[in-house]
Image (cartoon, rainbow, N blue to C red):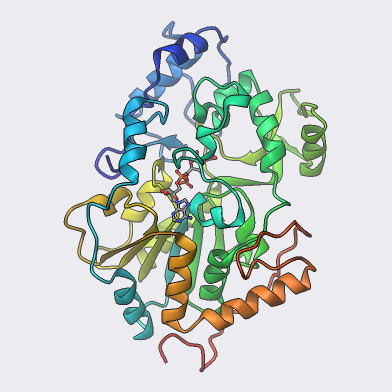
Length: 402
Ligand code: OAD
């Protein structure tokens, strides 16, 4: 079911998981928002309360807080079926999705492009996504001993037991992966002066690393660049937090002694202030490109419904997701399904940008003295520096409108 049709579905949990959860004591915690994350005790225990909160949120969801909006608990049999369904042919397809958008771009009709991204843009860099059956992170968490996959990013669960997240964080900390062609395509949109903003759910830092400047980037689910106390939000030196986590220690707040975590947004936490740029950007957008996301997490998923009704929306993904599952598609919606890197290469070739992108990739990788990903081979890490170039100019020869 699409996030648009039923935005506040509860997470469904298996019986055995509920049993496991009932063993855990309740954690008391405030959220960044004015609303309390925990309602007065209903005697349900921590996870009962969590479920009740999610059910209450169907009536009044705090749209600043991150929550699951899609079909729910990926461990449920229904979701597994959905995973299988995701491999089946799309329900709706626009004819020549990519070609129509390329035509508009070449006509110069798209000068304020908003890009919305998810984990699918980084799989070509060797980072698994979350929900792909079999390969996604949530299908491979056995070693972390969590009652249900998303618990590993749940702030109430973390409050009670930070260990699973800290073990995973050792793997997730940015530094060993390189941006791929898709990241550089987005950077090229900026280079051509067409990028209004990129909204990413990713916490891998690869948009920054490929040189998309800060003012063009909204990391909606936070990042590892800063850290703070998960209870009182007192900032904590990010490098010190990283060192502690890497050494198997638990960093604690200098003010209240609660556990410190990197400022990655967890379920039940507020999104960063910068996210609210969307209220300005989406009404201004003249093209929305959505890439590599299942559009299952709110409030992010609903962003795609906030562009003006006649603005073209292009979904590039392996499967139709969100409003793109609708039959027929909304007028102006375009879908191009398949492997994202191949699709984006084709997109770039149709725009006449491929050589520029390859050149850009080579020069940045050489600058940072690291193996190139131009041919899809994985790099081995390098400096975590991004080229802070803010070149929004469009040369006469490379403008899409030419
Ligand atoms: P998901 O794993 O939910 O969705 C990734 C989407 O990308 C799926 O639809 C895949 O089919 C698609 N995909 C993956 N690799 C692809 C490829 N090579 N070519 C084409 N499509 C591909 O990831 P997100 O939507 O980003 O939150 O998940 C959103 C949030 O859920 C994440 O930010 C994360 C998670 O809980 C946090 O970690 C805080």
